[in-house]
Image 1 (spheres, rainbow over the protein chains, first blue to last red):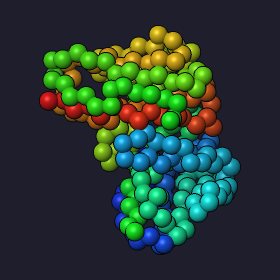
Image 2 (cartoon, chains in turn orange, brown):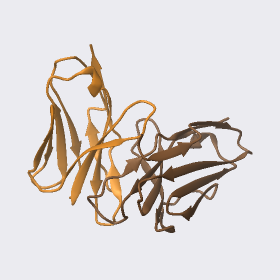
Image 3 (cartoon, one colour):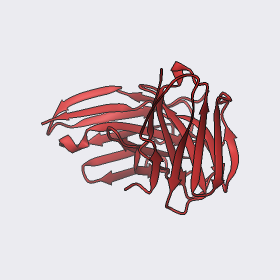
Image 4 (cartoon, rainbow over the protein chains, first blue to last red):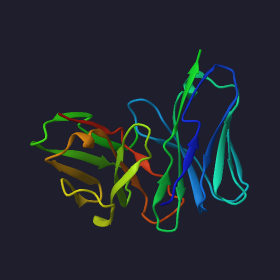
Length: 110
Length: 115
């Protein structure tokens, strides 16, 4: 069974702090997607990383795909209350399915 | 506005009831998906339809029955559900199935509670 472990499961920090969440697997993925889900809504795609070692930036969010394409990280600089939500990673594997992590629930306190 | 609309948003039903969840996508996508989301668990893929044909059925109990009458609409018919079926049911669509880099566009889900 392919698994995608996300850590931490829960994180509550003050506005302005930096944070990193991780997505790890023993499987190799052809690509990896990050989504954010806000309460009462469905997940919304933030970014897709495809190449090992790739780094993508989305304003204060920096996404990195591991060199071996088995892991990824999301770093948020100077977190804002609007960053609050459930962050989900999903890896694309050879049978065309996405393998999902259980998510990191992030709360940014004003 | 996500382009994927799910109704109802909330549903409470008894174990002997029959109900249906509806999903409609306005994005011109060819693939549609049903997921189950339970707290602290990964999204569970239930069904995938590509061009109105079912291409994945991940060992889902027969009390869940999908229907895809056209590429814009997807239903999930529910019958004789169990309390452990209480969850958020998410519908998603993508431009096509079996393309690793295609993002999935999600509806806001139906929160289902089984009494």
